[in-house]
Amino acid sequence: MRGRPRVNSQSKNRNVAIPRALLAVIAAIACACLGSTHARADIAPSQTLVLFNSQNAESQAVRDLYVAAHPGVLEFDLNDATLLPGEIDRADYLSKIRDPLRTHLNSTGGTTPLSQQIICIVTTRGLPARIAGGPEFALNSSLASVESELCLLQQDLEVVESGALTRRYRGVVDNPYHLSIAQDIDSFDRSAIETQRSFVEVGGITAWTIPGLTPGDIYLVCRVDAPTVGATTALDNIAALLDRSASLSVKTCEVQALLDEYPQGTGCDQLDDDGGTAQFPALQDYENAAARLSTLGIDTLHDETSAFFRGTELPDQEKPVLVVATYGENHDFGGCGVDPPGPGNYLLFFDNIHPAACFFSIESFNGNSLIDGTSRGGQEQALDFIHEGGSFTIPTVAEPFTPLIADVDYFVANLYQSNMTFAEAAYASMPGLSWQTVPVGDPLAKVTLLGGVTADLNGDDVVGAVDLATLIGLWGSSDCLADLNTDGIVGAGDLAILIGNWD
Image 1 (cartoon, helix red, strand yellow):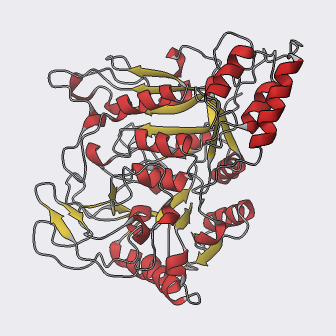
Image 2 (cartoon, one colour; image 1 turned 90 degrees about the vertical axis):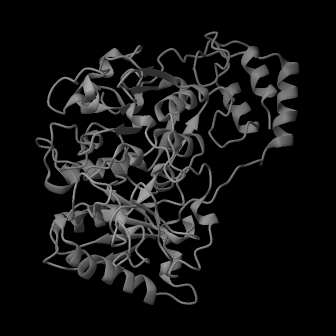
């Protein structure tokens, strides 16, 4: 069934006896080490605000679903019948979204105003997705996603500046949280978030950097949205998304990943490697992500041929897919590869997507359906991935330029490896703010990774008594979670590996 992880039918107990002396040693170790836990500061519901418009039926409905899924979240109703979905011009964005929200945050609360308390803002289907502007195919564009612009809600982006960009909302702003790994957003001081900063233009690439800006000075803004497909409405898909996002765990041995690019060579610079400045460095993103996934014990197919890979080429059709990263309709860019089959519907070939799965594509308009519900340029729409059963994606609402797309490697490092929230993983992977990207998914969702080469069977970042108890409970079975030496049976060899990795 699509979106359901495969149950290992071979995990039957074989009644292999554990030697009594070994049991005594295990019990002593477990008793000595019980209580060791690993904790990190997650974004709390009280640090999360749902932004919605009660005058739009879908926005109100998504608000209702999200509040039910996360009791304790705060909310702000724009309550504006003239606020329509799709695209909004900048003047209306300021008067109908930014100004009311900023006033609410800055004027509400006791000794600590909401402006400092709130870390994450959840936008809902039914709100505008893109701020109008132009030129579209230039780095000095004033186009932006509403979500990316709201990250810098406290900064005055309307200021006129001298130089190539003329106004602060033109061009991309360097994201201070980008490239961080396992850094809790709540660990950054937020007391100066209302402080107005100076903007410095980055020469040669028409971008901005803000000296002194820290991750504590921005909001992590994510959108909860999904498409209507046939008889399945967008609200049906959103309800399913929030339902599965409530509890996501992944056995590393039971999933696989696909990263598909074209060959590197003369005239074929790989798109995921683009960059070249201190703010937006060139990274071998797919290569690094593939290495990280393999280190986590996840079967990973990293293809660098001219062929376009779909789910049907994966080596194990029984394993759900956890990561899909592709050049998509740009796979044939410059004649470097072949075009994917069909007009932007290649996700239909993936029949087995894990509920905790993420989707990345290097396509300029993979977020166009957020604006008007349709595809553009024959490109796959990232919202389709939510309908297919995945939970996380970061599309773009206009031409993003390849150095500014989200990095798969840093997303994987934070969401799967470091057990961080989707909001943190998304923004740690996004090079720029006030730009085109839109994280889509439940920002408070987390994924617990189970198993892997480190013997951390319960995903708490500690190899200890709980993992030992899990292994003993699976003793004699062929469950891949505890079959650390992959010999087909959980036994003494796996126990030796676990003890060797004991924290």
